[in-house]
Every structure is written in C-alpha cells, then in structure tokens.
Length: 102
Image (cartoon, rainbow, N blue to C red; front, side, top):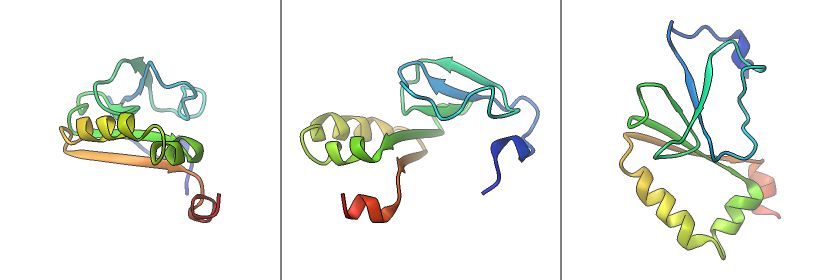
C-alpha cells in the first residue's frame, strides 16, 4: 500500500477529521493533502463537500469488540446514522486473525 503522500489527489481535495476523533490517523504531517478538523454528523473521516456521500467510522480492534458487547447500543446508533450516507465505511484497525482470536 502506497503512503498518502505519494498519491496524486485532485486540486481542492481536503480530508476532514472529526473533532471528537481522539487519535487521528491522518494529519498534515503525514500527507500532502490538506486536513481540516471539524465536527462531522457521520463518521470520523470524510472529504470536504462530500460529507453526506462518504463517511468512514474508525474503530480499534478493542473498540470494535466492545461494540459487539456492552457498547452495542451506542454502536448500533452510530451505524443507523451512517445509513444516511451514500458510501459509509467501517474501518477496523487490526488483522482478521487478531479479531477472531482475541
């Protein structure tokens, strides 16, 4: 997988990081693409001008497993809200092996 800094993006392309995202994986230091921080209605990441078209909800493996247990109600509310987005994505940060064998 190529680093973001090596990918050519269209002029004006700007990534949005939700202000509530505690440990963003994208910053101005990692990419040549502009990054802005603002409250998003859906997900943790989006693209300026496409907020109702694309949303990425990011979960660590621990968060995701918690969402299947005690935090399930909150997780289902987040997923239900994401149904308003044309292209919602759930990004779980870990290997499939680690998720299946915690």
